Image (cartoon, rainbow, N blue to C red; front, side, top):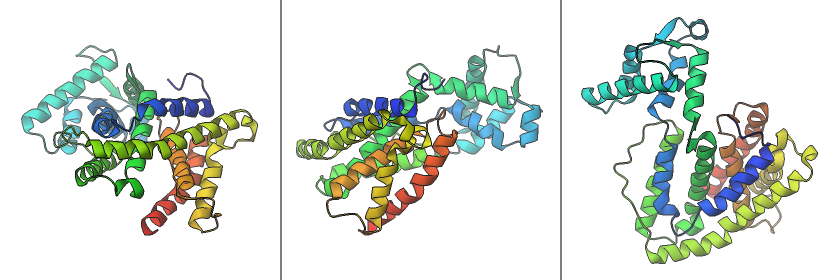
Length: 308
């Protein structure tokens, strides 16, 4: 199930409108661990993505093997290394049971390991009520934008030591999530920023994030009026922002392009990059091409920013 027939510009407008109420400066730090936990892949989803890597393309296409408890146990043993033998056994049984449920099979029916089965499993996990791929794309974008803002040097340096440490830990967790690592949330306690930090967050939010989201929304709406002139199927709406960033790195951007304008462009780029991670978007030619264009320049900017 994709984005109910909407085009990229409509999807991006939906995300931007969503972000305006999802990111609240007085609660964002407290919410981030829960947001990241929501984005964590389920055991079944991780297993489905793992399966095609353990057999050849021909073996998978021919459906030579079945998904059984022994295969799942092998996956669990090599993925959840820190668990006890008893916990691994319970997890393997749970995964097998959930697979039968997702595929509408009885507990005794065999599960063929083939592309069709893998697709059915992934589709089912991507479209569960309340946690669809659209829900996760919006939440992932919220986390990425929030961390980009909270870790911005100007704001970060103003926050208390405790808040800075907490934000850094959340950033590390998100990094692990993006690398497909298992995340242990037990060590992350609920945290509420002190009133002095909240005041700084609210003030900075109004001058940075709020303006950035409104600016990006305006870009989307302007592009929607002339979709024929937008490259990459509509995702090219970000091209101007990327080109401004490139000129900034090369020190060719005019003085009027200050840190705020630069921040606004990076937020827009982050929104696009997280949108194209949606499982029903990222394999399209539009997404692949815009990523090839954006990522090298954005990585150069991040390295440049560290030195600047």
